[in-house]
Image 1 (spheres, rainbow, N blue to C red):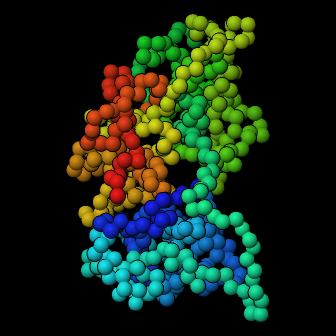
Image 2 (tube, rainbow, N blue to C red):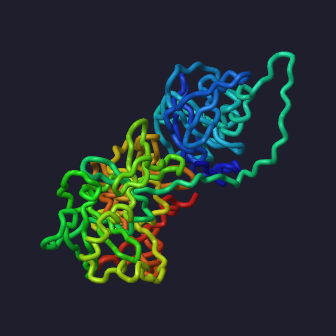
Image 3 (cartoon, rainbow, N blue to C red):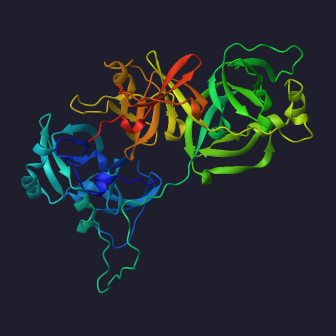
Length: 474
């Protein structure tokens, strides 16, 4: 996925405050403006290029893009051993992966004071735009745009030959390409991982009591009360042909043809993740309830469950348990008047409930371990390793109640914030709810948090967060 950042592409640095990501090379500590950083990732397979500059190590795939990998230590006149980590940055022409020894911290500094000694920093190296001291250690601020244009990164022709540039249409800095990624809800059923496409899940929540139905088949758990309406509860595990499971707490509400709602019970919800369509494969062999699959990592296969296909195999028996059977009307499903809905993820912070619209959520992690940042860093509360990179984290618990949150390893919601992946810590992820648009009531007066709407759900008010306002304006 590609991102652009208007401030970064226009080369504007706020004079009053600068947020920096600090990294170690061979013997230097360098700082990179945080608004130019796309992500921090492990290096993938490297493809060397002939006639390239000394510091240009080759091409590497990072964050869904193919980009140059640059040895930052060598670019600055030193020598860096193999390994390390990649800091992906953007310039006006695209993205670069800077190989550094390690990422050390994030800092917030006074931009006016730091940039005041730009001349002295340039004398040290042409790629330094400033230098400053923090915790008795000298830091050098990188000029990303000069770095991208450095001679040692250019592709050079062999002796006696001339390389001619091919005419290409001019690039527009504000244009970016977003690859389509489909959100899936990952669940555990009988010890195995499965996925549901989020568009096929109306709600995810912890159910109340199940009223059993005498004489019903084992896969029909009974009826649950959904806001005063009885809904048939089904065992996903048994419909998949797996061993009997006692999962009777977490359920997914889904709507079948004709507007029939059923509750599919699973062992537990693992989280939300997004996958490119080219990572989804059709089943070569028929399997009850599973239409396709995703391959996670090298060999972890996750079946994608189709609620319609899962229930189709027991359609006749299920029809007898539904008071008004839409399948009995001449084979034609009943007309259901369309109503605009929004999928809302509800979370708990202390005693308060908050909601985030599902389209803004990239992934949900059950828990993360937070690495604290120096107290001088504003707005972010730490860094967290999310498996495919290290990201900055905002602790919503601190913003709501102050202090240090509840500690431990809390759930983390991953979202895009100002062009970069960011984590949001909460106390508990509760449910995914399909909420009619007319139930969102706008908040007109000011609030201590960036709240846009409130939604009444089951006697409680859920405050809808405006994610882009979690960080104050520069």
